Length: 162
Image (cartoon, rainbow, N blue to C red; front, side):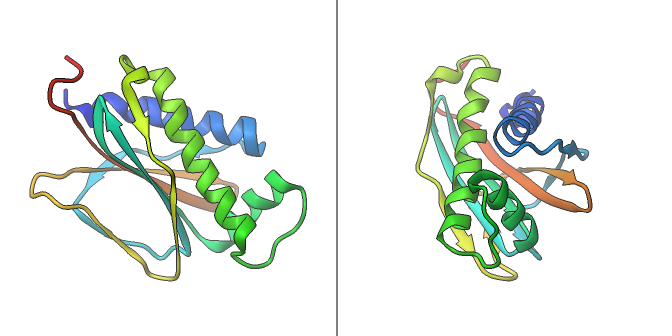
């Protein structure tokens, strides 16, 4: 089993837990699947966080403006209408918590190091991962009529995890 397959359930568990505990949203996870190296999104905002240490890779969450505003409103307790600094902070913090929580659900998780999140705003942005053998794990999550995607690309770092 490759490293991404080992992380499917932990990513689902971490995402469900993060949204329940921090945003008070009960999500429903879709069926995980693998996609190609380039992904086009009809989404408005995405957050990316890098992984190093025991594994190398990145985790991305990508969503529409409406859902990002709902998350932010729940976290800060006041309404938002635009993708302002509060929304950027909230979406970045969510990917940070998901990536940080994954460590408790996998063997050797204490050896995973996460970077600071980066947030990308704008319609129709694309993500492209280098490497001809890259497989991108895609998991959709639904909350009411809204949804977002979690994407992950990971591989074992040399001399790490057996």
